[in-house]
Length: 162
Image 1 (cartoon, rainbow, N blue to C red):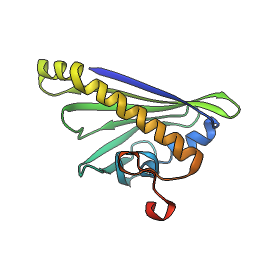
Image 2: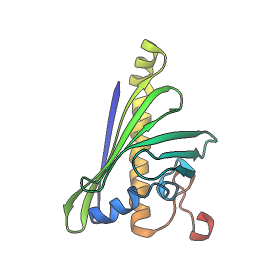
Image 3: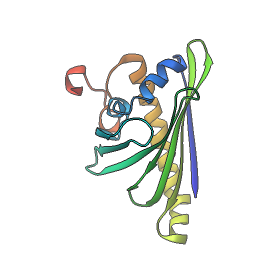
Image 4: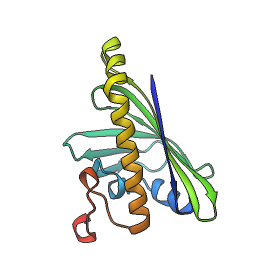
């Protein structure tokens, strides 16, 4: 199983960051891979189906939603290939009055046995790290400006985002 943790320091309070992360329907506003979401249920146990800009979709179950600890955990049911399983967590930590850290952690397994292990070492791990760093950079831009993020990090005008 692979694990990747990506963290970004943000010039905003932990409460401001958590207000966005914990709102399950706001992901398309700041995530460069998600074009839309639909939510079945509310809070812990809710299922979020996300349509991705590449034309695929995925469904995740919210496995933890802890406002005191500022953590949001999820389990993806239909992880995109070459992933066999994918669990993740967003964590917000206060580092000062108007500063915080946002961490995005995933644990995953790949299909294809030993070939998957080689693929992970050669390609997958680096690609996921780069994508997560970009997503957190886009999150910061959204947090500071309110400008929605589109495919591949395109900055959308307020009119285009609606």
